[in-house]
Image (cartoon, rainbow, N blue to C red; front, side):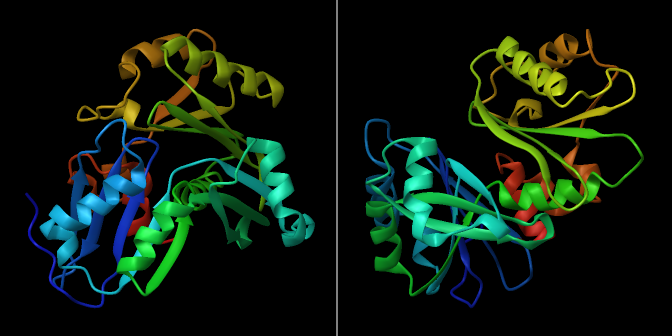
Length: 276
């Protein structure tokens, strides 16, 4: 059980995944406190969050400020093509029905893109009932920003894959914009390898010279959502690609204490170390 968060001006970060829910904040000593919530299956995430507010001592100590971090479907749009009037129709075209969603956007100026994502309306009502000041972000945006900076290291092209909750975010950058970005649902090792090799071929990347970088819950021993072992995926990929690397958050973030917190997703670690 983490130390109780004192009521202060630090925001409470509420991360809502496809099947996970967690709360985190910073105490007055600058330490990151993290509490995962056991989600009840068959019950909406809004109902789970409503129950959490009744039972969680961690949440009861929160101030009126929150950051809502949503791990869901994201539509990327170039900044110069972004049109708020057509936003709903574009999102529905990409992800079908979104009647139950309120749409939000995060501008990514360093990537010349706008990330559009949805928040369940009932979930948002629960948040607004408890917080007066709420920032809303998509979970993968801190990862995009951080790995975009890593993409400038060395002369070779790089493809990145972020694994979380049986999903894989695959992306590549070309200077200050996305070269490729897509998400894939994965249930087996072969799914991950197939999609990665397909994208690699689509981008015409070199099998011996260019680099594939992997990160996320697939490579964490304490993960409950990993689809396979690290060795299974790496062995499959190394049959075809020479330079396959696993990003170690502890080394990546210079042994920041947040990387030692059991069960904390990489995107949340990145948020606390690197910011939005």
